[in-house]
Image (cartoon, rainbow, N blue to C red; front, side, top):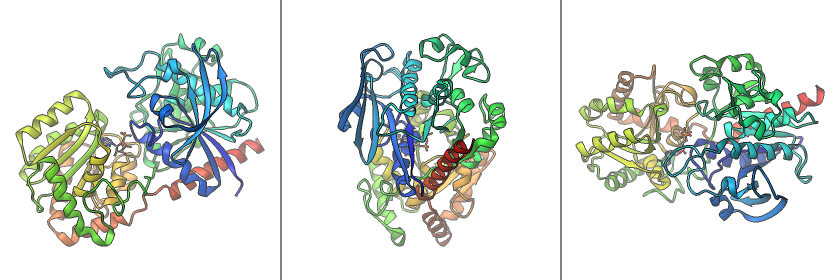
Amino acid sequence: MTPVRVLAVASEVYPIIKTGGLADVAGALPIALKAHGVEMRTLMPGYPDVMRLLSGAEEIRRWPDYFGGPGRLLAGARDGLDLFVLDVPHLYERPGNPYVTADGVDWPDNGVRFAALSRIAADIGHGLVPAFVPDVVHAHDWQAGLAPAYLHYDNRPRPGTVMTIHNMAYQGKFSRELVGSIGLPWDSFNVDGVEYFGGISFLKAGLQLADRITTVSPTYAREIQSDEGGMGFGGLLRERASVLSGILNGIDISVWNPHTDPHIAYRFSAEELPFRSANKAALQQRLGLDPRPDALLLGVISRLSWQKGLDLLLKAMPTILGDGMQLALLGSGDAELQDRYQGTARGHPGRIAAVIGYDEALAHLIQAGSDALLVPSRFEPCGLTQLCALRYGAVPIVSRVGGLADTVTDAATGFTFGPVTSENLSAALARASLAFHDKPAWRQLQLAGLATDVSWRNRAGEYATLYRDLVASRRTA
Ligand code: ADP
């Protein structure tokens, strides 16, 4: 196995800082790649949480003026990850969510903040750190989308580039004035470069200029080539179809392990599924739900946004209530959805519980204690909660889109429905309810789920093959 060196560029990395699935992937992939002969280091911004947690940090470079203020590049380690951290206080020293202010609006200088990250990625690509000269620079999502663009326009020998889309909806769009101020040449500002409808899109830059494009499931890779699924980039992706592929995400099966999970009430293995009932009772008690073992307890762990289809679940409430089911929802996001779920919970005490917030420990208990986990997304690049559910014996009920379609098999490991409407969701719930009351059938679904491989092991192998193919193709080009 020829060793390959890869610089990953990510704006969030679990367990250091996380707002969504991107962080999970950025945190797990480098570790899983070790077994495949890939040495990955990850470049991320020096947010306060990162600076606090970084250990053994070594200063590699220092600049008096990096994009408008002093900056440093550090190398360090955390949680088994080798990190490069771009410490530029005037860009990153802000508490809380990495992208938005306390009022929930985007930081007005996000364009500069993430251009700075991509610029340093390109410089590491060119050999800024002699101890780690990558063969490939792997950019994740729009925040890293300019890395392939800088490398392309620098006109120097460069490493291969990969752009991974975790969610097409976030495109990193800014006004054209930004182009000059972030050190991109003006000849990059055209349809074959970074320009997008008169402005600049960091995601488009990556999609247009990276050597390879990946997304996080084969079905999403197909969906984003359509005008609707591509959210403006369908045409571009159809043109670049020959370099686009889908590689499913895995989950960290040591963090998500019902046998050792410190957050759940009773630990269990596949042979001990009846112990789930103790977790169900604990979850019901914690959330004030009626202590009924016979009620089908549905779990939801989700951002509350249009994407996730949770407005459709509100419309399916008559089925849930009429059929004697219970609902335990954990989520945060859209204020109207938060209010509506809290209102529904108030109207149906003992039956519906809504916890608004972000709570890692409760997420684990919901996976261990709910009978079924619901993911009614309108689109879903991969989705991680259904993978955790498969591992915890919670039967997933999911819409048949993106990675959900690739990871849940209808009537075998869970229930799928489509097109994504509240009627079809209700019908899937009714089918699940029938199965739930047929104990052997339900056990069969749970066991098939538990036997599904949701780990990173094989998926990391697909990335390793992609990197090696890319390096080989550039050598012969
Ligand atoms: P997305 O990245 O679109 O938000 P994913 O399913 O890919 O959706 O990943 C979401 C991740 O965030 C999962 O690991 C899930 O458990 C976690 N998560 C989402 N909402 C919450 C919450 N309110 N509390 C705890 N964990 C959450």
